[in-house]
Image 1 (cartoon, rainbow, N blue to C red):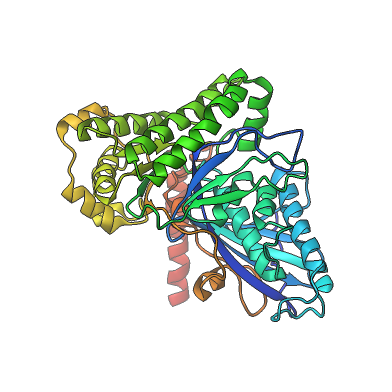
Image 2: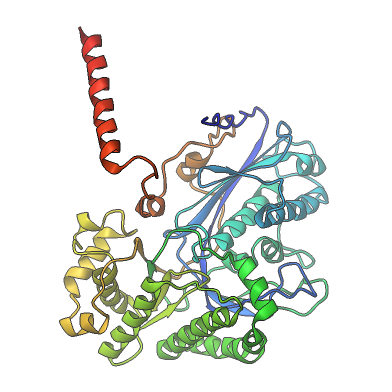
Amino acid sequence: MVPPPPPHPKPLEVFDMASALAPTNIAVVKYWGKDAARGGNTPINSSASLTLDPNDLRAETVMVASPELRSDELYLNGRKVDVKGDGTHAKRLRRCLATMRRRCAKAKHPPRSSRATSSEELSRWGVRVVSRNTFPTAAGLASSAAGYAALVRCASELYGVRDTPSFSLSATAREGSGSACRSLDGGLVAWRKGCRADRADSKAEQLFDERHWPDLRCVIIVASAAEKETPSTEGMQRSVATSPFLTHRAEAVAEPRLLDLQKAFRQRNFERFGELTMRDSNSFHATCLDTFPPIFYLNEVSKRAITCVHAFNAAQKRTRAAYTFDAGPNAVVFCENEAAADAFAALAATCFLGADLSRRGLRGLTNAPEKLARACRANPPSDALLEACGDKRGGATMMYLTRVGGGAAAPLADSARDALVDASDGTPQARGREAWQRAAPPPPPASGAPRVLRVVVAVVAVVWAGSLLARRKV
């Protein structure tokens, strides 16, 4: 029996609304493992990341607060998500909202645009959170970081809450997803592990803004848009419990490497930056393999991407591209400049996307089909380079061409806001799937009837429908 569709969200008459976006960030010195003694999503080592251009990869969030909402609601990528259960993200969402509401309740006045009579009243209203990602969710591209950064930035607008000497939006975002604190700022951002018992010093610090190294580019090869088998939180817990290498990496590898990488970035020394980035990615995944049972985030396409980067650099006689992988199979490749990015993107498209690299053939496979097609025409990889990359082709579902960008921002453009929420009554909008969802491989055919029988049934259905239309015309 087919279950009935979920009830349509309740239209609202009295409500406040705010919106925000936040980009994803990709760690170049990664943290892995939480400090159980301190709690609060604090890490066992400091980390650093590059914030990517929000025009290409971002989370967009609209929050609606109303006295007519009896409980909080969350809609993510068009689906309603349970926020009352014991799931990890349900708990973290409630924690973030509780922190922002407490801060709101202490304010003397609500935001000028609020329909609440006091900040305390506004803090008691239920909220409806509607959010979407423009890139794959839970696939190792820091979608949680972007999502919680957008949530906190949006809540700060809704409740009129700002950073103060005693309160940090960065620390609040960390409570949702540790690396979310790094998405509030652009450029190269460090997340300091801190040492205070109250965890107030475990927050992000912008080291260089997005204008410091404007030539830097990024090519992302989406090896899989599916959710990873081992969520990051579960993976960290397993590594903390079983990996002897974890503590060594946190203390003797990650912390010194962060200082070296900061120096290389300051000097815009790509060869040094690239080597440190790749080595850190390797050491992170070595920790996952050292975990028992081992965690496999990389797949065969990931390994081929690593081979392609090293083959590309060998052909260029120096390091001009550098891979890194978060907790997932998708390759993020930083490139020295646009020329290097175009050349590597042409190689990656040839190896991973297929034979038709025209603008039309690349539609739905990249965020920039015209740019990628132009790069492929101008930079055809040599036979020797393709041979060094191996004889397998295809395997990727998407490619993104992007750069380093700014941090979270509010509000959304009206068109983006209206695509998520009906501004007249605060209800979520029905919307089509994102490009990364359309590009995902189709699900396997349902088990049961053989394929031929299913085709016959489909043909009979079409003929029957046609006969009905003919009768109506008569």
